[in-house]
Length: 106
Image (tube, rainbow, N blue to C red; front, top):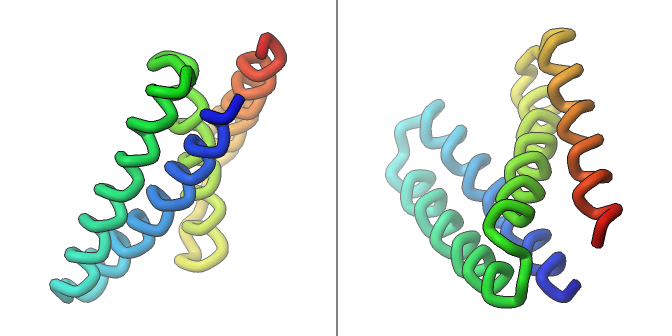
């Protein structure tokens, strides 16, 4: 399961890039745009490595999507004071369940 390390790094760099994207959307500063784009490029290098090591497109994509969505939602709520509704919480809970079920098989 070496590929899980690269999925984790993918999520970390995707979140870093997402934060820079949010900062760019608030300030319009080209520095944040450049850092966001750079973060997305680095993140996708880890995605390519994860696929090469056997994450699988479907399994890897679900783990990445749910993991990055959870992290982005937490950062949005804590640092940017964004709100989440009950339906969104149910959706994120189902996402966590999907990760458990996907990794259970592995």
